[in-house]
Length: 130
Image: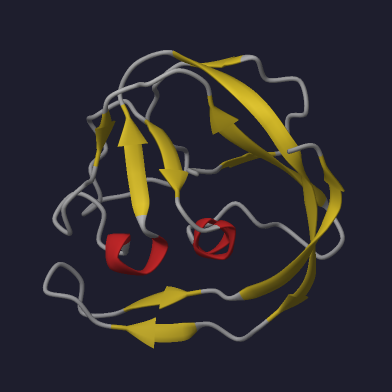
């Protein structure tokens, strides 16, 4: 299952866009909807803004074409398992989670950037529908 995280609990459809947190050298041209196969890794991609805030977890319906970005497109893809959908899709709410603990970031290196940080979180389900 692939997961998309949002603070919006009323999503029915998602349309590809450039993520707000996308900054060069990350791809800032290709509209996409970001997913990950791991909720913990998706959290490390940058949605978190505080402890105990509820985050909605979605998956897609149907069979959209998925795209695995390369390191030159998303420098932390090896750590987040980010996957893109480049078409408008219907989504289904899987449940809501909350962050229970934030750890100090770990520093990583890549050929794209000299170094970057990945944040790590503990989380728990608040509600789960599937």
